[in-house]
Amino acid sequence: MSDLPFGFGVPDRDPERRGESDGQGGSGAGGTGPGSTGPGGADPFGLGALFGAVGGPGGAGGDPSDLLGKMPLFAELQKLMNWSGGPVNWDLARQGAISALAPGHQPTSAGEQAAAAEALRLADLWLDQVTELPSGIDRGLAWSRVEWVEQTLPAWAALIDPLAERVVAAMTGALPAEAAAIAGPLAGIMGQMGGVMFGAQVGQALARLADEVATSTDVGLPLGPKGAGVLVPQNVAAFGEGLDRPEDEVRLFLALREAAHQRLFAHVPWLRQQLTDAVHAYARGIHVDREAIERGLQDAMSGMEGGIDPSDPESIQRLLGSGVLEPEETPEQQMALRRLETMLALVEGWVDSIVAAAAAERLPGHSALAETMRRRRASGGPAEQTFATLVGLQLRPRRLRDASTVWGAMTQQHGTTERDRLWSHPDLLPTSDDLDEPMDFVARQGAADPFAELTDGLDAPSEETSSEPGEGSADDEDGGTAPRA
Figure 1 (cartoon, rainbow, N blue to C red):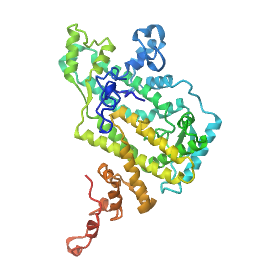
Figure 2: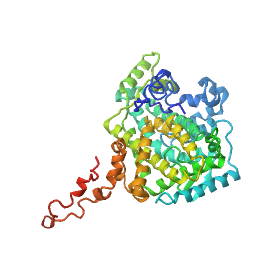
Figure 3: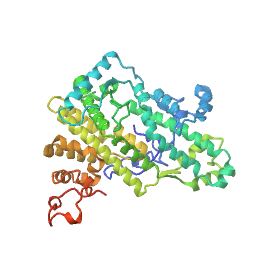
Figure 4: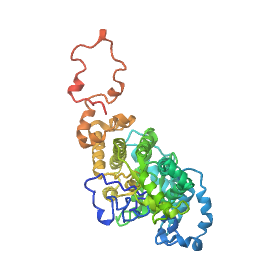
């Protein structure tokens, strides 16, 4: 998963990683930003994915001229262009993802179904002893890679559609009135092409994810149906390759992580919306370089090479590849990205903490399996690549370690009840600043009632019955929790 399908090549926000990929054509995140020459840089919105499907495996080496001779999809191009189901052509995304899956994907067997259900059942029993949150699973499932694509599409649509809608609207709305009058059908074509291009690129991204993810929550979000705990047996086996651990150990470790995620998302009802809102808040800052579109139209009117021809989708693709769509990092966007990074780190850190508590003494291979998961994150696993794709966000391992420190220390110093009570309201959770000094945050939790700041003033006495001087000041002296910004 090295390509960023939507081509948002914002600079890497992690100073430790910045510049690692610059020598490969790009903009910090693998050379995939606008104007880069790395993978995806010349094709940020996916016409290469659509046309390349006829040229070879994985969409590589395709030639748009081969459409007529090699694929019946060309006969359906008009249907694709007439898509009216939203800013992303999800029919195309589904078809593209399934066709782009790695060779050898296979359906699940009855034995795999039974093994997955049993692993998830046992995982829930172990987790009951280390967390106050009850089970979030009412059925255990085993999915093939194809089923993962099909079953997670509704969740992806809810996340991506608002982002894509903003981009398509920016594309069409950037045309000045006089230019729109000259261009004629260009605005409508750009909107139609936006749905096709997003559909093609989402399909590619989903195919890469389906080849990697071992559960329905590997990307840090609950993507499956409510109450379903999911393992992907083919990818579970791949996760354990080279570890010299029994397959049932690997399966149980991943089942513990899936069951832990499901508890959190089932019993913290605001969590899913907070993560989604942070992604959408970032999308609101996307803008279009109006002058670049005007120049393209003027060049087309003058017959110059590189101009926008409304009848030529490739000319629109060239325009998009020139960097006219760029995220504008406003303070509001930076805040949204910081909030998203922190929330995802807290989720993963909590999962790490309770899985370690449940498995450390029961699962002989836990240390090796946990280390494999850490290395996977550090090198850019599904969660990191997915959010880099969507919003240019790189999850930093340092944040995950700090979040794990908070949850581990909360358990040791205050117990599981106080630890899990922090999830009862978003204002009780540590902020990004708190993660800079995790032990200070943990120490403050024992100094005052964690709900005091939420109820402050509701039962305040009148002036006639106010407390004596000095009463109630102990919390401040002991380092009570300060109001959040």
